[in-house]
Image (cartoon, rainbow, N blue to C red; front, side):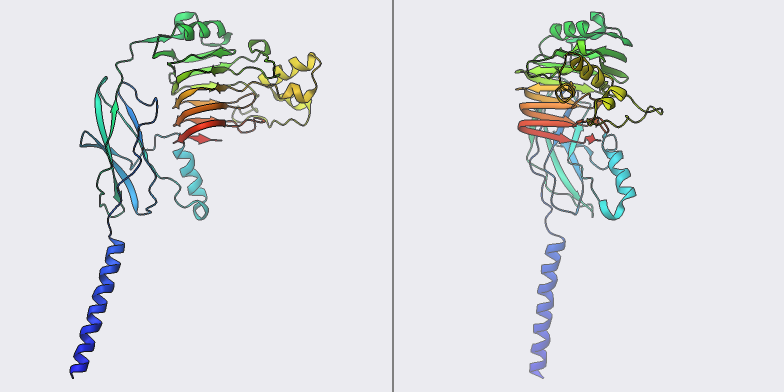
Length: 368
């Protein structure tokens, strides 16, 4: 009888140990978010963008955001981000393949006061609603009110989609004050090649479209047989291009519906000369100068061209229809893209971004 009792006691003890071990694994401590930071040039007078490391824990459902120890929001429903609706559509059509691709680990804190210090923290919340300890705090400072704002229209630019505003735009860039903003208001502003400068923000308002001129003569042919880009930056620092507007390279014609670019390829000169706009003009210009087709075709302009630039921030804008590539960043560092939409489908050699250098961060963005 004693042997039986001992056996039951031993069995009960083993069961208890197993239960404790399983319980610890299933309901263990939720890890705090790591790597919280404020990306370079992402602060405005009323908002600061936060980003942190994506968690490897599949049980994390969302994150809470704290400002000066007060919870101000969470990442449950950030549907405003440009890329999200496209990813959600892909997931709904490919459920077995895609599963869950979306994990928010950035947040734009708004309604802040200018010229003010803030301390930010983030916590993780799991699928059972349990919250982790908050992350290590990061300090941010909002700049003063953006009083140094000038408009391209103040320099004679006309947004009628016809007038070429290269001179007006370059004058406006040159006149932009230190850490100031050059605003492109609603309208369609055509321009050729211009050069940005250090410590400036180019802001495209909602409804603003900056369109590349379709004339080859509005761009400079460099010694390496490549035309200059539409917006160029060379050996400068602290460039911001933000807003809800659009930059179009005007490279190719669209189909009869006006929604899709005609398919481009470089198999023959007939293709580019039939369906190109700026792509046609630049290729044709060099063919007329007796360049061979390959050299002429590969001379086309990219849209945003950065060389040796330190600190670049692109946010909110839509980039579309390049004659060549959309974004070219050579030997650059600290480049940030947040909530950017890049549409280059069917534009031959239409790379969304070519980057060399150090520290490239792309978040919440969509490339087609």
